[in-house]
Length: 148
Image 1 (cartoon, rainbow, N blue to C red):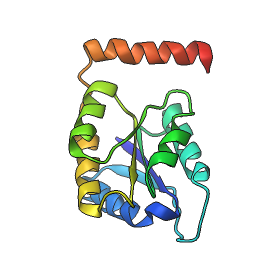
Image 2: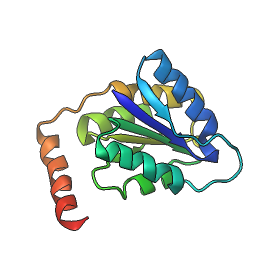
Image 3: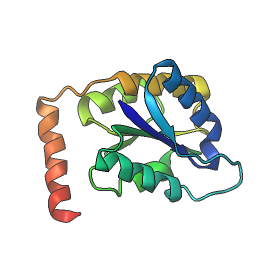
Image 4: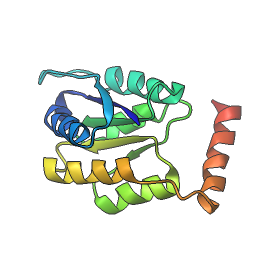
């Protein structure tokens, strides 16, 4: 698995925690920044990462901003992306099992580093269940083909 990782200024600290987790799990990743605490525009990070995941260059992407909301909205504008905004472990497990999410968004101002690590690990190691869920994902994919 290869993961694209990015944050805006509001997610720098948790992004570093997630990078450490990826190192510990021996998962290949590229950190696309940002490396500042001064204000930057989240779409400048979310959109390029989402495009890299959608193209297949990366298998999954993780985005962090203050709330995770902006990053998830931006990422979901890219065809082929299913970015889930997650702030609890149940949702992390469910979004992989049921939604086959290929991107994860979290908010540093919403959750702490320990919970963020737990969420990311569950999401990274979770598997898509397929079955009735595959039909639902297929409907989204078909919609994208004709509307995006």
